[in-house]
Amino acid sequence: MNKKKLITRNDFLKKLSVMLSGTAIIGLIINYGKTLSRFFNLNKIIPVDIRHINNHFYENTHFFVSKNNNKIEVLSKKCPHLGCSLQLNGDKTAIICPCHGSRFNLKGKFVSGPAKQDMKRYNYKMDSDTIINIEVEG
Ligand code: FES
Image: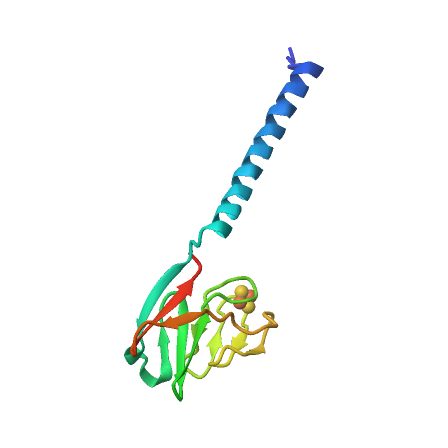
């Protein structure tokens, strides 16, 4: 015998209201987190000793630092297309994205690929003659 479980209209409405309430609560929690991060600076400060910038270029997990004629630029390693981690190419003449092939010059200028925009730059502050503090997203 085929036993079908019938649901009453009231039961359906109760379940629907519980699901909608849960969705609303999750939305509030996510939105609350975004609001909190706007009021409190959750970014990280990473110090870099610029004496370690060999061959005018330094790389860590978050950024590239280029130094030319005492001009320092800090470029995010996050691809402006969809966020993959950018890498130096084999002969260290360009920055490339392994995901979809976007290409940038060593100053972060867009050259080719789907990114269609320059690499993001991070702000930094000189802490001393040799240390810069770089602010990256937390
Ligand atoms: S994520 Fe870098 S090109 Fe798509």
